[in-house]
Length: 156
Ligand SMILES: [Zn+2]
Ligand SMILES: [Zn+2]
Image (cartoon, rainbow, N blue to C red; front, side, top):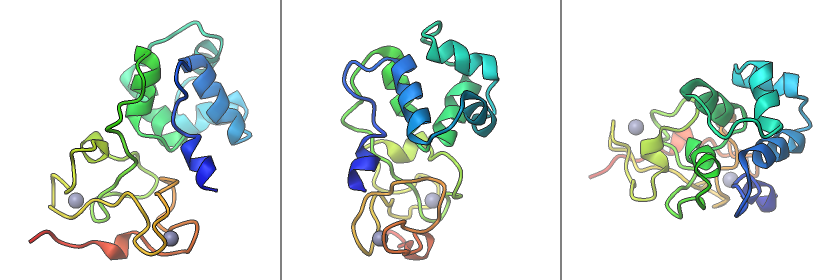
């Protein structure tokens, strides 16, 4: 199961085309389903997966990140052809984060330990079983069922 989560990160040298295709097929989605989930035009998905574009506009970038439950930095990394910054981690503020929404880039930065908005310690793992947060769609840990949100701890 942990392997599944690790697979969400782009492989070294992976292209945008290969990356999006891989994550989409991992979920057994058709291009139409991804287009719908991401709110991105079907043609755009087709273009990305046929390698016709290496750039994403803001809307496609955030839409795809949300639909595929990945930090936008992963997409930036494949678009820029750079290895994923060591500094990116799936992390959320258990208070401000609304399940089903992409995490704020300020949270996923490795240097961030507290939420910039409310000062709550950021969560990158289940506080109960320590498994990394594997999905941004659920408010519960998919391994043990612990609610992420009830574990908000205030700084100071
Ligand atoms: Zn917060
Ligand atoms: Zn857990």
